[in-house]
Length: 565
Image 1: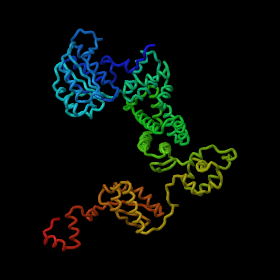
Image 2: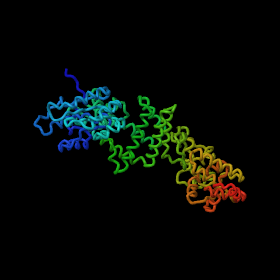
Image 3: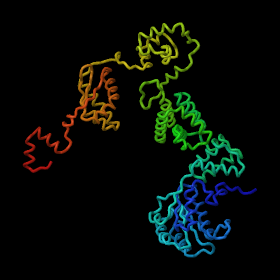
Image 4: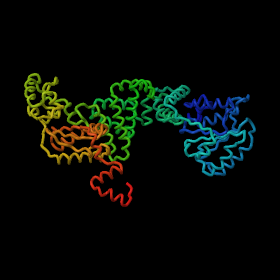
């Protein structure tokens, strides 16, 4: 039985052409070798598993082959020295290295020193390495590799030519996995390889390790379902079906679907993160300009394009915000499942148009879903015979807009109760909640005093200040309400900017005062009076002038003691 070689070693790049996703760096290094323009100290930095050490080995081999007739299979093992700085990080190790640098190579032109994880060197070791790195012998080239460039002292960085390796894209990793599958005789779904590439998170070495693990599980045939099961990731079909339910405002089925996800062993945090990413992909798929940012397989891309037409742009933006807030609050929450369920219910309520105005965290009431349940057989009535009679009765007790609505009043009444009866028709509160009422003629108009108005006016300003809206609270506090006829409240501000800001908060202030004063005939008029600004003193001179107007002796006091303002 032959020993198994992991794919990360078996398919380690032997030439610059084999390096995945780093074309800019490999082209630069090849041109530098050809033009004899290679620096003697190089720093390769970037995430794990993106080809830093592989490029260092290829470079060490290439510079000795340049301009010679030596066959390419020559590895120049005696000319390449690899040092792991994680375990050899002392001053003595660096001194031993500098002693070896002085000795010229026996074969080839250069001795190449590859120092991996160079950020692990101690401060003293860095200082001992400075002089050799700045003025190395002509036959020595240093290649430093690290994942944490910020830990290297600036004096080392200034002596090196820096190459920043980037994360490998999902499509590049997937295409490389396709090549390996072809070489190994493995059949794999495009979406299966895409899941592996996504799970690797930009590291080719991780992608190859995951690939070996999945092949051990599934054999020579890799399917999307098998890969998702083995890697314990949620299949994108789960997110597609969940999004359909959210767009349809179907809260009961949303909660049941989430319960099934939890029963399969997935965490709520993992699910809500994936759902936010799914919304992001739908947002990207809505525009032809950004569709290239959609890193998914061809089959999945078609599904994204179809579902993107169902989800509106405001819905996706609001849904992403709510999912992100849930992600931020998940770890600190004591009831994490409830947090995710509340988030899902809020997302499902975004596009619900049953209420005219909804707060930010509005959730569709349970009564709405009860009304959608099929009626029992014993409650079935013959609608055609009684429809005219019901309409006549209801039209006397509800606004004209509902009575003249093209929809049958029978349907409006049943939204509140699955059973139809004369008692349910004569409930004015239920009908008012169902209808969208614009006219406040039938609402109470309790008489109030100016002192009570000023009290609640100040209370609203305090509420704004507690919410952190300091500017708006100041504008409300400065403005003094004046009560006119027919409950008309007027408030004057000093400039147009304050007037615009006041008008923005006017609907909320109006709603607050109407509820507190139990008077729905209140209206607020915001006027502009530039003379108000003269009443306020801002500079020291203006403040002194105001005091002098009240007491002229203050000026005499200032002159006597020669005081400054």
